[in-house]
Amino acid sequence: MNALMTQDPYERSVLSIFRNLLATAGTLIINTFTLPLVEKFGNDASAWTKTFCVFGLVAVAAFLINFFGTKERVKPASAGEDGKVEDVPFKEGLKALFKNKYWIMMTGMLALFFLMYSVNGGATVYYAKDILGDRNLVSTINGIFNVVQILAMFFIAMLVKRLGKKNVFAIGLVLDIIGMLLLNFAGGSMAGIVVSSVIRGIGNACGGATMWAMVSDTIDYGEWKTGYRTEGLVNSACSFGYKIGNGIGSALLGMILEIGGYVGDAAVQSASALLSIEVCFVWIPIAVYACGLLIMKFWKLDKEFPQIIADLKARQTK
Image 1 (spheres, rainbow, N blue to C red):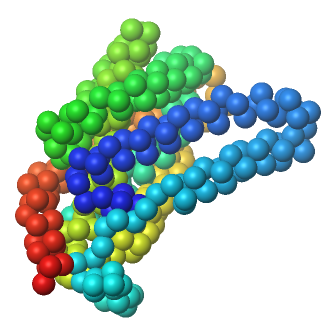
Image 2: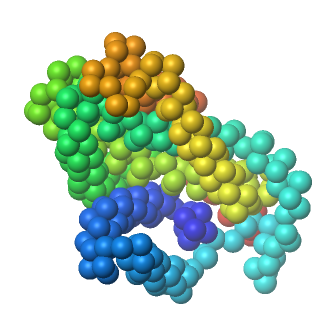
């Protein structure tokens, strides 16, 4: 929807910020209210069904508000005077997609990031229990991280306006790396855990607030490059990419722990098992963030975008 609602890069960034902000808030709401609702409905099997029926009704209401409250304002450059445009054949749209270098960059990065989220998220409980020595630190790490991420979102728009999406995204990657290293070498101190979670929360806010706006910008680049505007194909292909990343990440976590010799019911884990946990929780994310920084070295779209939009508007007037 971002790509169809506006072509202003700053407005897209703001839309992306609210998307990520409310998604994070939604996650916190679900985590906070699921068990209390289950208990209220009787704390049995049917209580879970009733709880998710409530969440389902809320979701339907949110989708309807989105449907009736938004409007597609952006028209393809090839649209006629009546605003209609010919459908793009799937084969041609697919060819155009792979001529879009920025889409390829973002899709690859999304796949890597969601692979990393899956591995890192799954390893959190192991890291807290076996590395930091307290399973309950999971809620501390995740709670501070999520709250800081939400608060930081309110300031990201100002940074994007001043520095641009690419630079804000890159700053977020650097902060994520610093936060991860600090947590790993803090020796389990509470101060280190808190500071690390704050830094990573700010870093993730920078990335989450800009990533999807950057995806929307690749749609305009693709239309400028190939003549085909394929919002649906771009976003569905990106969605496919990060779902693949999620799936591979889940399998990778179990594989690495198994190779390291992790034993779930062991009182003390071996050195190789502890190393495998660190690889999943710390070093794979750092490697992915570093890949993101490398990809950003080749991202020139922020500078090219004003001329691309001007060219597309000029085509509409012909």
